[in-house]
Amino acid sequence: MNSTFLMNTYARMPIAFERGDGAWLFDEHGTRYLDAVSGIAVCSLGHADPVLAEAICDQVRTLVHTANLGHIRLQERLAERLCALSGMDRAFITNTGAEAIECALKIARRHGFERGIECPRILVVDGAFHGRTLGAISASAPGKLQHGFAPLVDGFVRVPFGDAPAAAAALAADPTIVAVLLEPIQGEGGVRIPPDGYLAALRSACDEHAALLMLDEIQTGLCRTGAWFAHQHEPDCRPDVLTSAKALGNGVPVAACVARGGAADVLTPGSHGTTYGGSPLACRTALTVLERMEALDLNARSHELGRALVDRLRERLNGCARVVDIRGRGLMIGVELVDSAMDVRDHALERQVLINVTHERVIRLLPPLIIDREQAMTIADTVADGIVDPDVGARVGAGNKDVAR
Image (cartoon, rainbow, N blue to C red; front, side, top):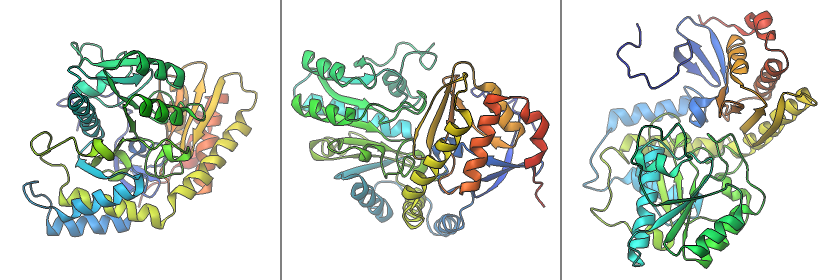
């Protein structure tokens, strides 16, 4: 087989996976790889979780899809659960993170419209990534993501990430800004963590200027950072709108935009919708994922193993001139280098460990939250070996092979 008939939208690694088991993936030749990517922060429960698999199979045998023309009780249960976890009032259940962002953008614009603002604008930040629809790329950082797709969606004002005074000044200067949208920790932007107090300062500025605080927790949410949502590490910064996706379905497409207060009520029948969103299958999956996360105490596990992984990296890479920074929260970890990190990715692949590189120079580690300590140390040591001596992989690459039987 080949990819001749696929559009050329991905620079794919020379590998194809056929099955998974926990934190392991097996390629078409039976070789085992330790997954430190999780489908880009999606498979937090790992692969082929037996409880989740049984729930999905049972739901497929029962009812996969029905339109949102009538009540879907599983959708109502999922909305209630997400609101309880996030402190919100209402949820819109959809399919993907980009669709959840589009819902948030529409909430912000309708919120401005109801305030009598003819052309409402949204404050966004440098380095952001919110998805690949036209609205989402327009809200994201300028660059190759937007190249060739003009005209972009208008109505965005941009300030530096992590600079609360700049955001407050923009809000004060422009009464047409009706919302602030950002990631609590930037993922595609290089695992960038803002200063302590940043989100609380944004919350205060939004309150002062009657703007909505909208947090994109698509990558950071659902135990990834050691809390249900990353903003919950900081007091006094509860958003008005929050988006969630990725880990919510552990690979089954499902996402949500949740809101509170007036923001929860601006969308009315006919103003927004979805064909597939909130199906019985997607909602049964998401409910089971949330139950599994709670039962396995993945917040505590993410915090503990994330700290151990970062400590090991810092121990191994202390004084390494190639390393700019090692940062992270929970099991969302970035290692920034002075040069391209692609050789480290290739080294790790030779060692049968899958890692991801973003912004060319940042090794981004997003392993399943069910990894054990030994697996965490393997990931750290593989990355450290590749940074210090990329040739190590060629010498010891056979040591981690396990052919499926």
